[in-house]
Length: 464
Image 1 (tube, rainbow, N blue to C red):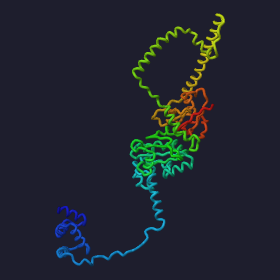
Image 2 (cartoon, rainbow, N blue to C red; image 1 turned 180 degrees about the horizontal axis):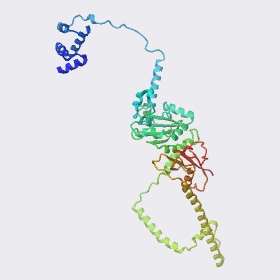
Image 3 (spheres, rainbow, N blue to C red; image 1 turned 90 degrees about the vertical axis):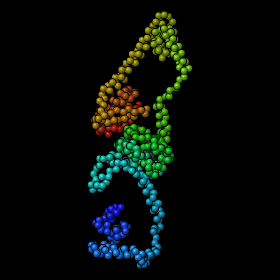
Image 4 (tube, rainbow, N blue to C red; image 1 turned 30 degrees about the vertical axis):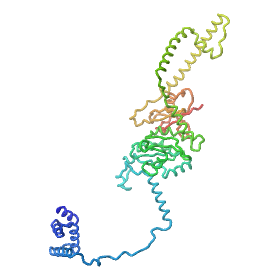
């Protein structure tokens, strides 16, 4: 314990160990009194002799034994009373405005940045350079974000006639940072958001984020990150995306909102049409059959198997010959065997002519598809830096997706549509970018990169 007190004394005062031991012993082991005594003895001069130190010790000891003397001289006078105004008129309004601005900043900013670059911040503006680290890859899309509250974002969207897109993120979910890196930074998605949406991004840990999640009943455990498309007038939810969204898929799903603004008469039907389309694409539920149903089906199939050969043996070979007659009208009743034979030959000739015509038309469409496939350039590999994925939205709502080279011509898109889109081989169509009022692609010899189509979404429309 003595060694610890000596070490602490030396650490505080900077004196040597011998002086520390002497003062601690003089103060009966009281470390605080020894330190105070040391500084009292050092106040008069920088260096004291042993004799002066001894006198100081003697005075300190005698004062401790005699008890306290008259301490009234050491008591300072009280602080005089003063009156003043801490804040004037309008200070309460300023305080409320300041608190609102702090809440707004807290709700709109990233409260925790998992990829913050402290080294770049330490360099300051003079030494800062373009960072290629994690902070720049996963940073929030500040150029797209609306800075303000959700009510202000709704008012802005109503004023500009745009839809409101809300992205609620969680810093603990990597999908949130992946959205910042891949989706919101995509040129096509960015241009769509700037043209047709007011984009509001918030974190779940902020005050505004927690209130928004409570209003729209968003589960912070299973539903983050979540992206919502809202009607800014009514606040109704039009579309919801959970987790990470591929840029191309998002761009395709946003096409209906680009074609219809919030004031369009059929704008309120977008959510209903989307739900109906999802229901149509769901596979039909399979009915579970009981043993009685299976037995009944087996008996029916066995009866059909027995009756089908009899029907085929009783029916003559003129079944195909009746098809044209039935198509043109009721079959004439022959008045004599010679006329019946002549009519039968005519019917067989008509049937063969129709079959030859169908056979003649089928190769035409097939040859168009074959020629289009032959003209298609080879699909680049996934590791090819020149490759770009292009999605084509059909009138039915389906999508065709293929990887092209950036140097391929625009005519390759038409060949791809003729070879894959149903009915495109013998029906005129046009291609255009998936933007409202976009003109058809006229220059078919232009490269995909020069036309600005690389990695984008193309709209397919019939011209007849």
